[in-house]
Image (cartoon, rainbow, N blue to C red; front, side):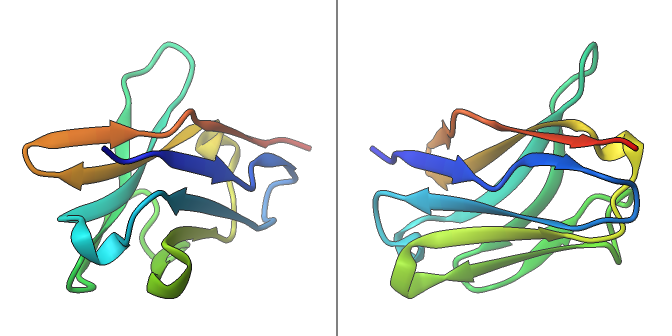
Length: 115
């Protein structure tokens, strides 16, 4: 079992920055991978970024160069630093943890990019 608690969402103007945090209930070293997904109204949930236990990262094309995923093993926490935010980044962002063969999800945190 893995419990995930997200924080850091909010309202930001276009061009601004936010950092999301996802605290896991177990060592992130013990997980196959962790990641961030997002779901905008009327759209399917989509991958934003992932990081493996070995530190390999993967990003959606739409966020490459703007978002950075990282992990702090001492705090069992994964972060998503989001810079140069655009209105189209508005969505509920969900933290995901893979402990094969299962997937675990956080409750989601709202990110709204608007002037």
